Amino acid sequence: MTAAPPLPATEAADPRTEGIDGWESPAVLAALWQSQLAAVAAVGPALPALGEAADAAAARLDRAGGRLAYAGAGTSGRIAAQDGAELAPTFGWPEERISLHLAGGAAALLRGVEGAEDDRAAGAAAGAALGGADVLVAVAASGRTPYTLAALEAARAGGALCIGIANVAGSPLLAAAEHAILLATGAEVVAGSTRLAAGTAQKVALNLFSTLVMVRLGHVHRGRMVDLQTSNDKLRARAARMVAELAGCDAQAAGAALAAAGGSVKRALLVLRGLEPAAAAALLARHRGHLGAALTALGREVR
Image 1 (cartoon, rainbow, N blue to C red):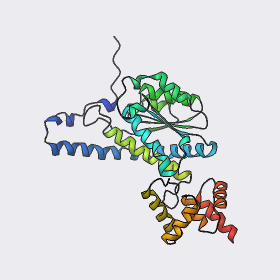
Image 2: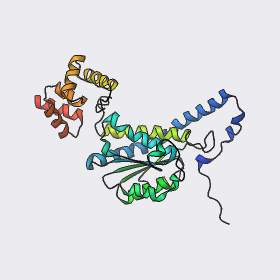
Image 3: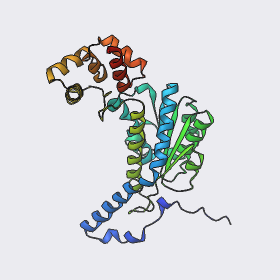
Image 4: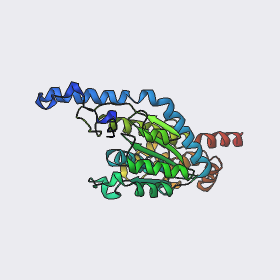
């Protein structure tokens, strides 16, 4: 008789919280809170691997103009999809260069889709759509979700740069990835509920990864998100404030420069340095969108 495979650490029961359903509410909340703190701490040992993965991803995306793709199922897939969906409004990352693959499709964002995470064929099809210019971030708490593993395997076979994020050491997803990110969160307060500690660690790790990628690609200047999309009043006000702070001008001048630059913070800052909007756009293009490099070059030209 074949022995059952060992449970992944994320599925184990934590003996410290076995009687949690009989505890008073403050004690339950304290246990959950402590678990969340530990989940954030679990990201710390992964920082070197996250840095290497982000630098490799930025180099691939900068050189080849490919897509940043995410794949996952259930909680892991939803967290991954959220990270990808926020890159366009926050950093101006082109929407056509984001590829989101969630087991069960878009419907799975709002509700569980029965059997979706076991669909290797769907995962393989998602991964096969990626190529050598692309980067895939595949996320699975157990590190062995069939959909996610198949997506990563197919993407890697097609030449995509593949990053695996999992909460179990030695899991197949980490073994198959070029860059393996282990978030060792262990047993959950509620056994198997990886929406808790595992999900928190994944969210933190993805925030760190994607923000570093965007920094490396020139979407951040002096700590500001200078490629944000000014799609509502709050963001338009934020853009004007950014321009005023970075240029050292008043709000009226910042607003006028932004209007001339079509709402682009980067172009507005160059307009305030004396360029026409078209010339500002051309200068940024020559420097691959990096505002600091464009300003340095402009300074040399002025001298």
